[in-house]
Image (cartoon, rainbow, N blue to C red; front, side, top):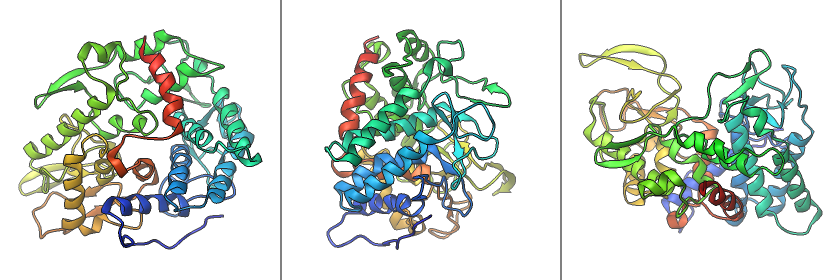
Amino acid sequence: MMQRQSHVKRPHPGETRLDALQRHAFDYFLNETNLANGLVADKSQPGAPASIAAVGFALAAYPVGVERAWISRISAIDRTLAALRFFNNAPQATGPDMTGHKGFFYHFLDMTTGRRAGLCELSTVDTGFLLAGMLAAAAYFDRDSEDEQEIRTLADALYRRADWQWACNGGATITHGWTPEDGFLPYRWEGYDEASLLYVLALGSPTHPLAAESYLAWTSTYQWKEIYGYEFIYGGPLFIHQYSHIWIDFRGIQDAFTRGKGIDYFENSRRATYVQQEYAIRNPLKFAGYGENFWGLTASDGPGWTTRRVNGIERAFFDYAARGVPYGPDDGTVAPWAVVASLPFAPEIVMPTIAHFQDVYPQVTGAYSCPFALSLRDQPRSRGADVREFPNGSALAPYARMPLRGHRAAAGGIHRRLAVTATEACKS
């Protein structure tokens, strides 16, 4: 059953602004999890399905909660075991009403039954986030108790199940997914994106590993661009430059591509963050609010699919879309959570932006910290007016997991474990 706990709206004495943000984001996992099976709702709206990515983020966030004394170690173990046992025992087959197939899992699951929700796809990248969360838990819970040993055993078994070779469907790169109705999706993880973690997991698999050629095939699709004076591996939405860094510290790790450019992936994310800010400063589409301390375009919900005239300009607005810079799409919607998750890369521009969002638009600080997305509806109005909020658990997760203290990209055992595989992959 779902368990709700009271939300603390203000920091405790001595807590910083960031401490409060991180703690409130962690509340999402405390309140939006089915304790019977460990599944985490994709959104806080009633009736929302579970997201396997949100479960992965929760599993990686529980150790942070233990270290910060927001949850007891025993409670974190109980939640972790509930999820691992569920996925270990969940039905895997080709039928349309399963939980997964070939070691991968459907993107969205029914919160109660754990079966596939709607006609969603068997998602390779979201399974990657889930497995990374499991491995994070296995790395953290390293004591000799029976429960912690079971966490390590189940996480390892679930990682070994994923058939990465099958997921390539005869090609060099990994497909986006599969459905029982239509087979493999026509898209592949190509071009720089959030799949960095996916390829590291696939290359390091002890049972179904991909060959080094798969990694080279992926990096061969990168786009190196110079935008606003910054040279970097292009990716428009911010989340592309953040998600894999939650688990892997890429500082100092280079592959053939980044060696040739004289950077690493951490530096690449730093440059992408600055490009986002510069885009908002230049504000080519003249959206209300955009500026030095109002930026952050990423995949997020929005005002809805509509077109209307604003101040004499015909504006198109979107619902969920992968907003990005500088080529769009852009409908004036920014994601404060994405700014917070950029903290490790560029704290000097993120901190003032967080303060601006909270102080000028106090509506952005809700039950679970910053909202999924924020739109001023592109009209010059009184300060803080008509802010739109779209909360989403998968979006809140990155900065609940991110160790904000010290402005570090990530920390802990999961970093050490996956970094070894990342280093080996980057030698290719």
